[in-house]
Image (cartoon, rainbow, N blue to C red; front, side, top):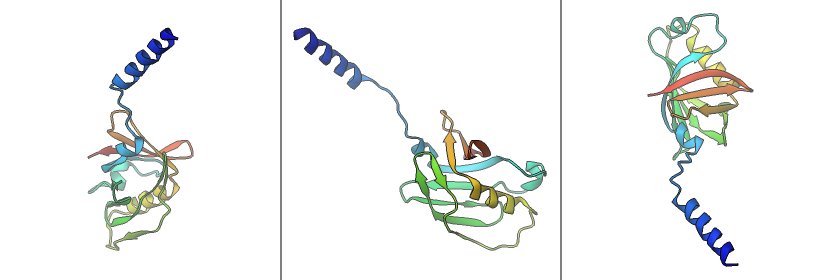
Length: 141
């Protein structure tokens, strides 16, 4: 009996003293991200976004998403469930004339296909995934 109590106290102290750093994946999502890779188009990345790369800002406190498609700004409600993310929610978007060709359309249509996300352990890279394929990669700004 005494031995069991000792083991229980010892294990409790080990568990409570652990300085384990368990970071919620959603917490890592917070902040501004800049696109540096997009799957699909036959045009080179720099050809799609010659002047300005698309950005996404995640505001977890307000459950809000905003960003820029390389020309127009967008914002809407952030729809998260674990590592699942839904960009098919209605978003408000400005309607400026864009000289960037296909870049904006490729970015916005690819966002619609995203079903989940993954943030690397160092918190610097965000992969937006469709099924099991990483369709977009963004870096923390």
